Image: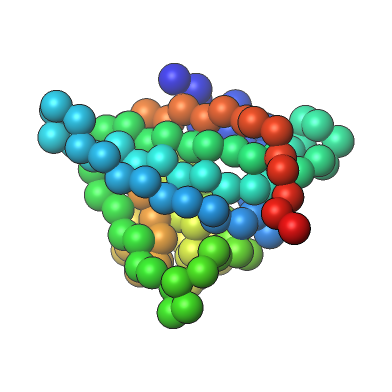
Length: 127
């Protein structure tokens, strides 16, 4: 598992990231895992585009509302905070930055989890 500090140092606030895929699974402990694949800028690789896969473990709550046209979604604003040992990731905050749990919950796409892992693979733009 990787920590929140390592994530923010490498990817910052994910300006202009593109969400490619969201996958939900329920392992044996009945707490969902959510994988989100995005293309984003890497701050540690000279601002180059990378394909990033985020896996959220021990998901306590989440909301994922489909876009109107059901196409890929651009992350124009992003917020991540840690409260009471839980990480709150908000890919679509209505209030920037969200300062309360209620403001996070008002989002169309947020995840609250205990653990996070992320990995990069080579970015291959579609033609």
